[in-house]
Image (cartoon, rainbow, N blue to C red; front, side, top):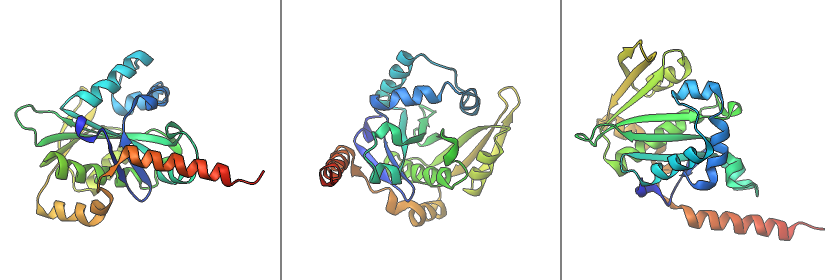
Length: 218
């Protein structure tokens, strides 16, 4: 989706950035994992197919995605951005007749970052972005029946179960954006979702890393 192609969102623990071609090789390595394939109901792709998928995420009007970065590492180190990646978060506009309905999907691909509240923070940030920038008024999440951690997280965020599909072994959770939810999101993550210029932030990061290298005594 073009709307976020130069958007950076900064949270307490994460930075959300557009999904760019430079991120594809690491993403491709993640998706070789059978566990992640099962958790995301995905089929393995070739590297070229993954690049095609990245381009579609950038161009298609019914998909919006951000790559999740470890904020501490992204801010404090000179590591390449791809080395700071820990997952992704997506919004799908699933009904052409109702652009206010969206499916929300989050993946924390790096095991060391799970169970630390990152999924909750990112989900809330993406929900706020979806409401404020995309006009979303209802969110759905489709989760594998055995993914109890994700089901529990979404329920804590006031999603409720609306259906179970035994064929695909998944549960559908849903929440409607009312004034109460708007206020909760605003209070919890509204200050995190002010848009920053992604390219400018990248430039500043490179300049800071270069300055650190210059200042390091020989």
